[in-house]
Image (cartoon, helix red, strand yellow):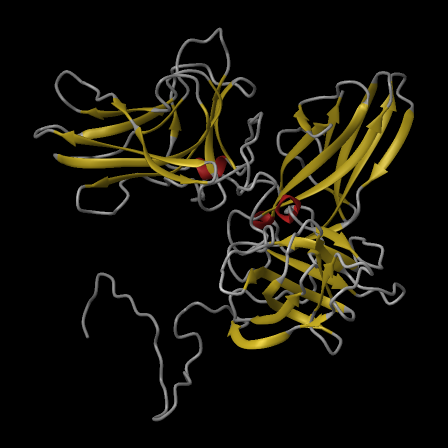
Length: 511
């Protein structure tokens, strides 16, 4: 009832006397237009972008998997918890059988066990899901279990559970989950098997959040420079101790790994001819007298006694810098370790700059969630410490953010003789205007310019994302024999070619 500098409202409700049903829509501001957060897609689409999160699981079934009507894949469209779930789809009436996922290396001995999981989406058939725990009895019997809803519902998700017994002398070694009928899109998440009286999940990666390393995701062995995420470098600048380049000395935002969110900053310096540090900095601070705590998370490797060094610069008459050696706090989350340090700004001084740099060469050091707070306060005085904010002044550019060439699973810049290659297209879903019908095309020419082979990828439909940080990856594989070859790579949206960032034409040439 008057002016306000900022008034927050939440959990608004109107209820009838004797009832707890909220008569308002979305009183907690958590819902979307569908009323759920987020809504179940009407037509799930196959993607390989999150294949590394399928670790621990395998596909199985009496169908031939493809990328249009029959598939099982990890997706980040919706999730019961975390970011991912697995989606099963089977709409091909010409193929009889089930679409299944399974784990085959279990060792569940005599006892009583509870299997539970969360389901969203739709299945045609009397059972939402069926489960076969396989026993190592003499006749190889399977237990066919019909799950039942527990009554627990969270948004579009419903919890199902069932209890089963393993008899004396038997051992369950496999678990297979599949649809008992066609489905237009069935999502599963948080799958667990626990023994009676215990809460340890006997399944691997039941939430589809882990990767093969057991972490989310693993640190790359050979981190590579990219400009694909440059707009997320807002608030920061690169230092000038060394001459940056795109191979041996650089600092760039990447989505290889992240402590939280999607991005982190990658520092690399392996150029023995350049003595100096690779740095990132913020130069518009205004920290007055007081005590401050700087903390950040680190993954990767550094040669040297200190993982990182920090210089907060005060505006004293002699322009002194404070050189701070950070130390690990003991907190570890997967590949990430937290570091922190406390420093004091004396009366009459003002810290205006903060510089991070490696104290020694590094093959790949990742930083994330960098925070600078005053004693007794939790307000981060740094801009974009998590590298998730996007600079609206940096053009988003084309939806094709990066094209990655790999040979035998290792990232390379150009062709290197015979072998198995694949090209990965990275698409920024947020930059998509509506949707893309993407196809990749690889043309291989011999040293005389004669066409040797043509390879097309499977079509993929990419929908526009409603928030920053969503990317899709599409791969095309090809094989080169001995000899000198040139590979010309195109990306199409329908019949139109898409421009590839960093190239003058809507194609990329590898030699």
